[in-house]
Image: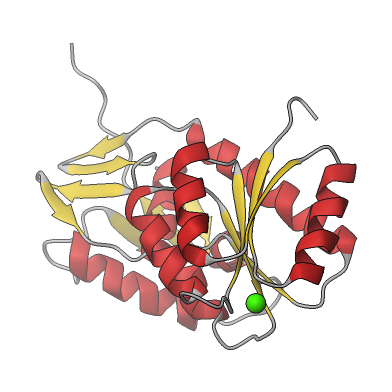
Length: 231
Ligand code: CA
C-alpha cells in the first residue's frame, strides 16, 4: 500500500466495530470509529477520510439520512453495511458506492474497499467535460446546459460521466450496466433505459432528437465528442 488509507466506520454495534477495525488495522488501514450518525458526520467533515463504512441501522439517525447529508457536501466514497437487501437500490441512487450485507466475510469486505478506493482515484483524475453548451464538472458532480444547473440523481450523474469520459465512442449497454450497477451477464436494459429517458428529459432540448447522447440502436449510447479548444 502506498500510504495508509483512512477508514471511518460509523456503526453502533460494538462487536461489529471491533471485528471490522481489527481486520482493517491488520491490513494497515487507519481506522476511526463513530458509534452514531451525527458524530460520524462531524468526524467525516473534520478528517475527510478516504472511505466511509456506514451502518444503515444506527440508533440516533438513520444511515440513509447520514448518507444524504454527506452527499450534500462530499464525494467521499461510502460503502453501506446493512442486514437487509431492501434499501440497496435506494442508497446506491443516493450516492453510496457499494452495499454489503451482514454478515460478510473479511475478504469480501477488503475486496470491496479496495475496489471502491480504486474507482474513486480513477474519477479524481478526470478534467471537466465541455461540448456544445453541455458542461460536466466531475469532481463536484455538477452538470450544466447553457450555464443552467441540471439536477441529476447520483445514478444519472454516473451514467453521464461514464459516457462523457468515453466521449465519441459507443458504450455498449452491458458495459454501462456492469460499470454502474455491477451487474453482469444477460441482464435486460430496462433499468438503463429508464434512467436514459430521465437523463434526456433533463439534458436535451428535444429528447426525441438528442444532440448530446446518441443511441446506437441495439448496441449502446454515445456521448458527443468534446469541443476542441480554439485558441
Ligand atoms: Ca446497527
